[in-house]
Image (cartoon, rainbow, N blue to C red):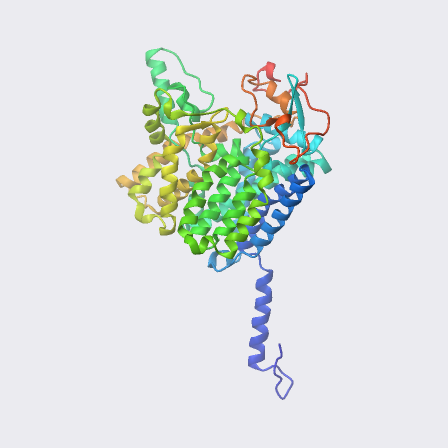
Length: 533
């Protein structure tokens, strides 16, 4: 660049404009944009794959590492034609969303500053085992050797920190990681909705079915018919009072407090899908992100896969066979060893078709009506739904109607986790419609208010539970923690028999196998039965 000098040595007008444009361009390169936040959050899902590669044999490990590098480069070169991803990051908005993410993760029990839900008893044990034993963890139970085989994506970065600085540091790293992801999701939800951000996020995070209605009915029957009182353990298992068929569509706070390892990839995929629908993210970026998130939650990705199929159909032959899509598929296939790891001995996980069970035909429509009344609001206000989101919503509604016909996992984890992404889209659309609807005491506004008020009971009970009292972090191993609960349900989703481990994929050798220990794990946990401590 050359500036023109006048008689007095001053830079003329055209030279000043050129220098200003150059300076502005350089400054723009240094400003954090929405794309940088998107990239950072997606890399949090990708990095655990590279860390886990150290537990594999050299050949599959090299393949995974090549795939991780290719995916990172692929995402960095994401075409940034859209105005939203190119826009500067709003620091005040992101700061508020990050603060909300920290608060919610703290209330969910991460770091053990507040009460940690029952699922954390096993989850803490898995993190402890990874910190103390590395990423190849062996167990011996009833003369059978097992290898830790589970979706370990959420644990990899915290466990790596813990191996260097101790178990408590691992828990702080877990809290930091998950709070960042929740904050990023909140930022994109608030920004993409293009409505008032505070009420949008309040409604989004409070999203739930009307679980309190069947609970109140069951209580009324017990009080007036049997002259007693019916205790309940968790409001979202209301179906247990009416049938032996276990179904649950978890509220957003339930997902966040109980299963952030499934919630985070399900929500993040949904954010990417919304961006894809708006032309901000291409199909290739969705494909590589999908592959990266399998290590976090295969079940959540089962619920994401139909949306991949939808976008592939929309792309047509030209989009499917573009150079970026082909490169994305190649990079994603490099993570195939991790997919094989996740399926080792998977046949041991209990599964069945619920549609053949007695009483399912009656329970199924009642379940949908109680859990998804928001669909009626969305259908009535279809004109308020963004045109880009309509096909996604139709697919989400169809999936949520049919997901309950299948059961997989000890507590029907398939229904609870494969529904995460579809429920996200329903929550996004419903919350946006609710914010756009004037509070004019009309029938439509009243219907929205009734649904919000009745569904608000579930997240409020989750928050109430957070103040039951914290208990200390435990370093008991997974077998010991499981053995203090219901041992009739084996943790088949956490282990694989050693003989089922392919010798070419990973070694079944490591530190001495962990066994059930005779010790107290949570002596200060005031809500556990003494027998469990």
